[in-house]
Image (cartoon, rainbow, N blue to C red; front, side):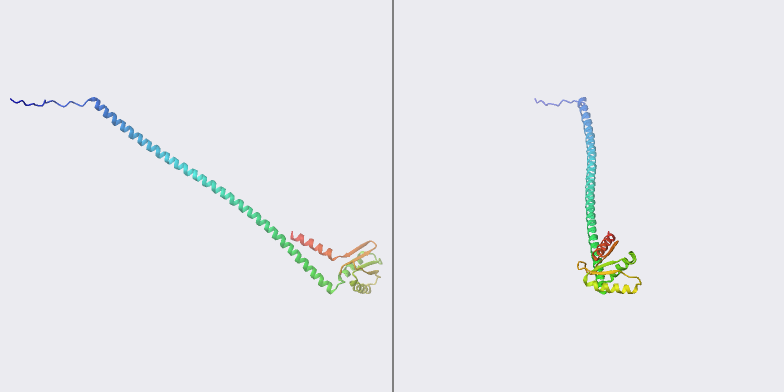
Length: 212
């Protein structure tokens, strides 16, 4: 006799209530995690944007500071350059004024030399005329000149005396201490000088005033 085992027939058991709760909890946790991930991503993006903005602002501030420093340095350099140019211009202007003064004095000396060559006694004659207008009639005047000029002055005095009806008391005295062309006129209450060096110095002062 043989025996045959037959499987028991039974209906499947319904899923336990505890398993459902665990599945729901896992779903909620996953959703919460996804929300947290999205929040963290959003914060990360915000931080990145803020950091980028702050970095750009810092770079812009640094650039502006460097630009202002460069502009200040350039302005200082330009100011120093202008001061240097102004100083050089003043030096050049002073040199040109000095050169112009010397040239004018040389021209005056040259003209005076030509005048003395043509008529060496002429300045003394002009001084005698001024002296005669200052002194009273008949007052003696002594005229001191360089010996080389004495004869020419005496001839000039004689010519003036011939043309003047009044008696002229003019005495020409040779004086080797006087430069050629200079003269010293003296009378009781006054004196008059023909001084080439003094004229030259007066001309120099006038030219210096004009140049300044």
